[in-house]
Length: 253
Image (cartoon, rainbow, N blue to C red; front, side, top):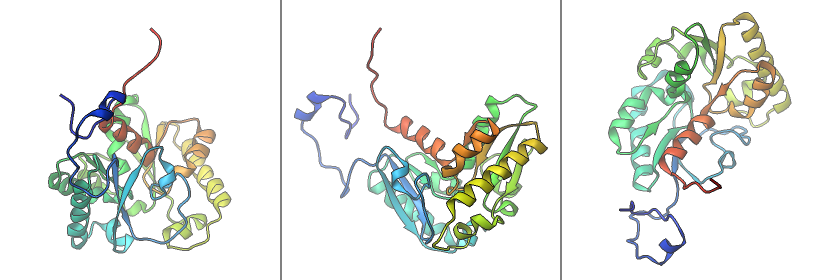
């Protein structure tokens, strides 16, 4: 029996279907994004051209520091956004900031579809693939807030993590503090240098995770300089999308 709403081949176009109970359709991924004004280049989770499939955004409004700190007063708004995305037909929900991790458990309990609010959700599978002697470098927008309390909400230990805060970089300031002009060349160069220096200081690093949803545009440069696997929000979202919208395989055998 085919799941309602799934068209698999040309013959399915002649079938009869019940109209979905939402005003749009065909969005595999719903993304909760904070209402912030700053440059969002391709690769940024808040830039829809970062994806080869449609995504549906739901805006939430509060100060980013409230999210960094896991302010309980914003929980209801985040849960409401997730429920709206589910009602509009998305198949999985993502948060456009690593610090949505504060609300991972409560949101996943509030809806009936998969929820991966933070890029940090990838840490267990990254650890599994590395030798026990290796560690994961995490580049974070606010290193002081990426602490054991936050990681504990995801069931993660900091034991194998080397956390590097990049929020203090001059070139990152337009993103961190909501400016409208970004020197992307300078930011690319500075992030690459930070990653390379970190790997030189810690040769035990076996992979790099970019916590911030603004950092995927710089993953290529970081990998070119370090030669290491680089994980970010896009690697996670692509993985989730593949799970919730499977495609048939064709080819020779």
